[in-house]
Amino acid sequence: MTSLLILLRRCTINIKNNGGIFTGKGLSWIHLDHRKVSDKFLGVQKLDQEGHVHPGLGCWKSFLRSFFGGGHDGSKQIMTLEDIAKGIREREFKRIVVMAGAGISTPSGIPDFRSPGSGLYDNLQKYNLPYAEAIFEINYFHHNPQPFFALAKELYPGNYRPNLTHYFIRLLHDKGQLLRMYTQNIDGLERMAGIPAEKLVEAHGTFATATCTVCLREYQGEELRSDIMEGTVPHCSQCRGVIKPDIVFFGEELPQNFFFYLTDFPMADLLIVMGTSLEVEPFASLSGAVRDSVSRLLINRDLVGPFAWGPSRHSDVVELGDVVSGVRNLADALGWMPELETLMADEGQKASKTREE
Image (tube, rainbow, N blue to C red):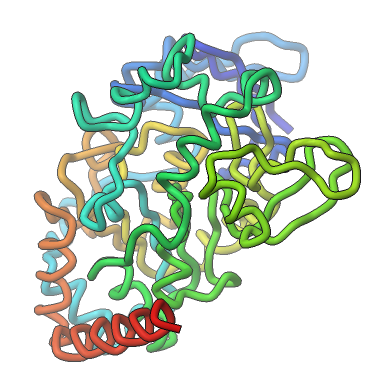
């Protein structure tokens, strides 16, 4: 088994290669802020078991090409959004995997993390942090949990409502074509839209559950709501330790269900990537983990990841601009907009009735 040593400006990690996808346990997420993934890597070296450099992998781009495959067959016709819609409508795509980031939640009013001026990281001065990312670093949380819980009050599920993008993914599930949704978001809007927990991989964790940091007693997220809404740090009823929502902080392991990708991505017949900068590893590299023959659709403000600098694939389709508009264009091409609008109206009425009760 070959070991791949990836050198980052901020950290070093070892990943095992087993047939082309990550298999190492204990993976934690790596923040690559404000720059494309390729800009953050100093280089990639392939090492043999004795630690000697193996020639042929000199940069991150070539690493992904060798590790995940790729390539371009110029003899095949370039696909379009209408081709993707036709494949979904005619059920040629029955195992669709969705990868999503903060860009699908900003239309609901939730700020993203990195947008200059409006992002969360640019508006945390009131918490007197040593640096913005400290609010999601586990060592700082153990030292001072108050800033995180102040932010949690703003982000807590129930403060915002899902938008058309979330309900489109819900519709994919209702039609039996969603294999799994992989989300970087911690806002819970996917669950609120009715996407079942077993169809979700919340790669950076969730507010739905929580754990005492001392005795490891498990809690439901709703048990913390009153404390969080009052601006206080929740403590364990058993040992008085701080209860932490099961959000994955920098320095913590990813949730176990993240490893569903080991079977999901080889099985997928369509990958939809939306609203993500693909700047956080190992989530970002999943975009290259589907088979070479599988179509990939990017609905995003900008070109990112392999769509920006990776090997081109004839079956890649890009819909740039506002994410909600891009999803609406896909729904229009599918002829699903009336059904989607009805679903949104029905769910909105249910939510209003629940609030009244």
